Image 1 (spheres, rainbow, N blue to C red):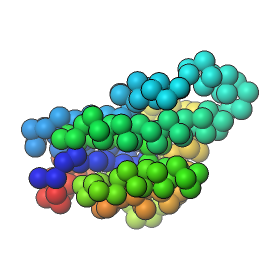
Image 2: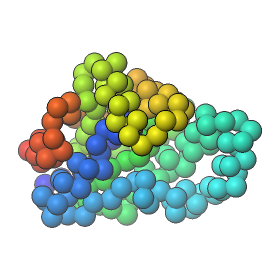
Image 3: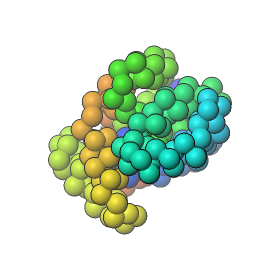
Image 4: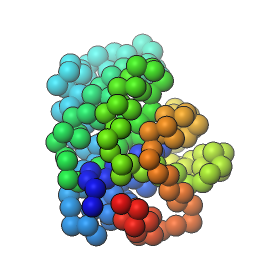
Length: 183
């Protein structure tokens, strides 16, 4: 078995749920980037106060841009700390508009063959609609919907993934089995 097993994809793609199932079936740890990211961010100067100031002055998009260098750094660090685990990335940790940050993350992820993109459908518009319906269960924030649309349409995930699994109408257990059979 090749570890770590890395799951990437947009918000509400099922990365954490599937990651937990894969980890349980393989009897290895599972780590969710969203749960461990802030200590990594702080290692290189992240500030909640600065984040809040940027959010107030530049809105959600400004805050998103502020996060990007910290997200790229966290990708490197989580792979150092969780060598034998299932790791599900936060949706932004695999999407980079800045080519230098993208190349940094691409270089970091290059050696890892068990890197799966989870997305509902081959059709981007269908994926956006499915994810939008899932997101409605947790938020009505239009900024989040727009960001997730960006995560679906931006090419970073497709470029980074070694394998893509289309999850529409599949249970988390079925997707987990598909991943296990692929490693």
